Length: 267
Image 1 (cartoon, rainbow, N blue to C red):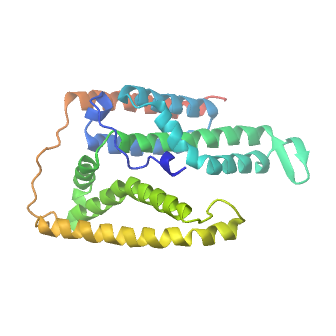
Image 2 (cartoon, rainbow, N blue to C red):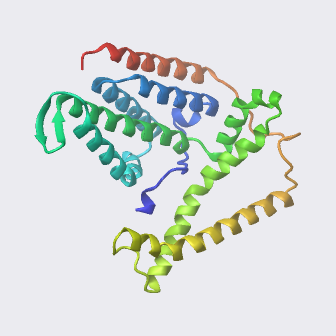
Image 3 (cartoon, rainbow, N blue to C red):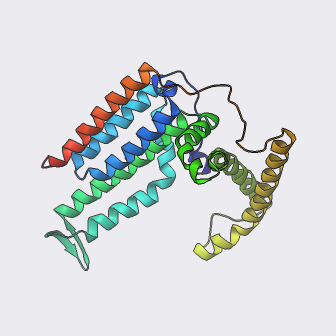
């Protein structure tokens, strides 16, 4: 199950999505998320999912990677669908005790599931096609106006990217610790909820110790390389908006306008 979590992973490539300016990708991802909450019908959600699938195909990222990343979130998706299915207002079609199924409930359940899938796919595409270093530069450049308020923009961007970068590392470390504990006879998969939570204590303690050790090693490495924040730092690669970025942005904005226009469709 832990191997299915792909948040923070980067898949190098030379597709148009990979070559897009990271600042524009970040802004377009935020715009996509906002548009998802502005669309309230099934046709709009299906179209939004088709758009993000097209971007995955353009980025040449296997769809099985996307399916694997959604697998750990299936319980949350199913729980959300059940809540909308049984507790939505409307004339009930089927009713069992306090549970009722209505046309509105089915409609809201499908819409909510599609919205969650689009949110996961859209946000994952950003990290799949953008390296942590480039993403740091993009976040820092976008937050640069806040430096007028004496906010540590560079440090904030660095902290966000380091946290995102170490998610796969911590997942791999957790899996190693769990396998080691199972080899010593630990039972992590059976029992009731409280027993499973107690069984995770031998996993969490080594994980916290390993995390603090990695943080200390990273801080030591940064100090040895004379890192002292963002003042006076230069970059090997400068970010520039190209004609391809402008064309891609216009195409994406047109797609988002079509998604918003689906609000007025009857289904």
